Length: 79
Image 1 (cartoon, one colour):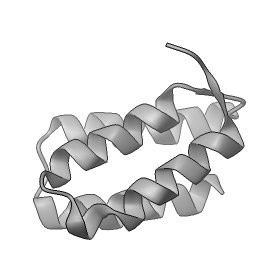
Image 2: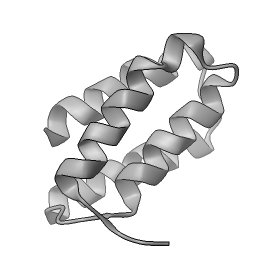
Image 3: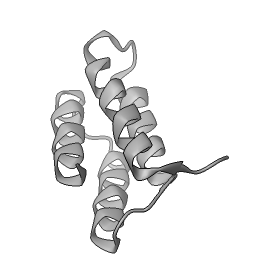
Image 4: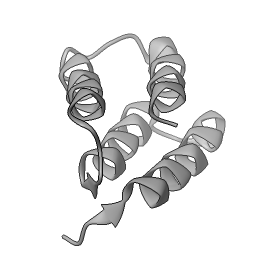
């Protein structure tokens, strides 16, 4: 898999968040957001920790209604 830049990852993740409402599987949409962010280069250590925290949180199978707000919050902190 190729690495993307931090800016490219944020843009791609924002597009995925905007498509959340029409996503047939919200959990998969959230996993794609996490995947885009975790494979990008250029994060600070605190930003990497935030992304990894999102992944760990998603492993706990959170309520579907909590996925989009959490992803938006993480993106807000990364931007």
